[in-house]
Amino acid sequence: MAGILIKLIYFYNLNYSEQFLNLYIMKNLAIIIIALFLTTSLFAQEEVKWHTIEEAVELNKTEPRKFLIDVYTDWCGWCKKMDKETFAHPEIATYINKNFYAIKFDAESTEPVTFGGQTFVNEGSGSRSSHQFAIALLQGKMSYPSIAYMNENLQLLTAVPGYQTPERIEPILHFFAKEKYNDVSFEEFNKNFNSQLSQN
Image (tube, rainbow, N blue to C red; front, top):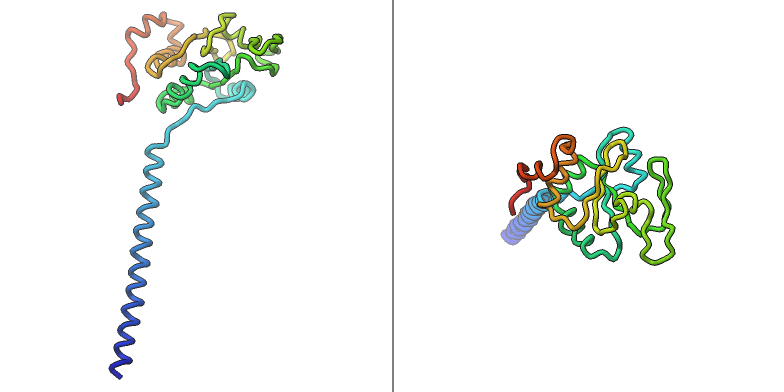
């Protein structure tokens, strides 16, 4: 009788231990999952939402915004650097997505482009011939990277050549998004501009 009782106690303790272990594992698993979710959300960085020309024009019909057109080439090292360091900056990306339709355009593309009721092509036969659309955007000053800014009516405001750090592009973005070009020169605007970028 005593042996049976000992066995019952043993099995009861074993069963209780398994239940406790399962509960312990489930509790810790839940904590790990929640921690991972919070970490992912905390460090998730917004990226620039790049549109095709056709997408941007269509979106502009219902929600007008300025256009930011990144004119690049595949061989341009500074273009790649700008992608990695400037357009990848979370605060810059957020501001662009909120205020602009961002478009990437390969200046040496061979595909025809229809924009503003006009069709542009690449007439060149060489490996580095410039597309008519890129020539129009940059007003013949072919330098990469360059960013062309357009208003909601698809009118070219200007093109800004050269690599831009997050700190350098920030006032330019604000200048065009807030239409300050109607009131002051960029130089004057930039003198009084206060950066909103977080200090690392």
